[in-house]
Length: 441
Image (tube, rainbow, N blue to C red):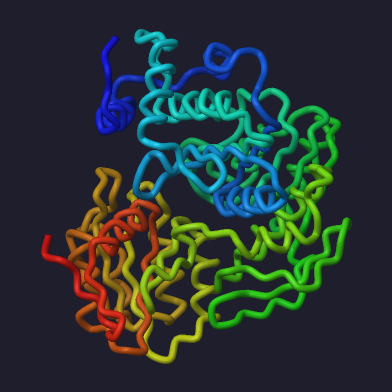
């Protein structure tokens, strides 16, 4: 049997989209049984939605860890390394373990009917969790829900559906009703469902699916989130869930949208009805949560946010309006071509929040082209825009004109967030200066 290095396994998985198609759910179930047997290791919490899935996963995991429970997480996408997708507790899978579990899955797959990129990683994660035997497994869907590989889990302990909006419409449908129906496909008979009551149409459809499955639904809305106070580096708020009234919860972020994701995680933690989960462990877990790329201050005055669709941009702009910036706001923006970026550009221009916008291509063949970016953005004559072939070039442009009290925001795509985390990680930073000078390499 061939031995692999970590870089070889990553390259193999990255090449899968070139030769493998998506399996049916029944085929994925058969492969899952080969990978883990008949018994799933740990109680599964299944999470679907358009925005906020990763944050809800992270908040819930942090709460469970603070409660003294072990947690496995399967997430997507990754920002810098594929290993981010498979975690036990706060630690991603090691390179050695990644290679080992890759080889085990490769042995059981049929090369003539090979799993897709996402399916292969899902099987790797489940095989890894089989070995580690965590108390809970948190599974984040990829795009939809109904046909998602993670939906091969037949009896999760809990289902969570986060905010639903317009995204991946070429796969999920052109209406909010169609997209909601795809997300609702994770709902199982008798399995409790938690969702955020934000769009009436979504709530109506999800309620219908819950009734059809004879499940119980717990929904939480903005009326449950009270007394929100945004501080310099944190948010304080109160929360009513029906189980407890929390009067002093704090989040280690300045992004208002995270109160919604935290509220979902709290409600989910309560509905697990595990005696180790207490109001105290919930409070500590929320504060301890760290989630990269969500209004993340990577350097003083430089923020990354993974807003990549209209609802995400709306939430991002709300967070920017609530900031404490005393100077100008500068934006580095890049987007993939299959998003509704014309609408996103309109939202940003209409907000009048940014003194300069640097538009960039991304390091992916999915990126919107420079010509297309120019066509879309130049119609907003009052907005000062520059256009760049690379994120590095765009970043240097903003850094060159950034003054001490200015703030740089980087948003538009998780591809961009990942690129910038890598680029900024290689930068020289002088703590006595606000300006960051990047290495030439």
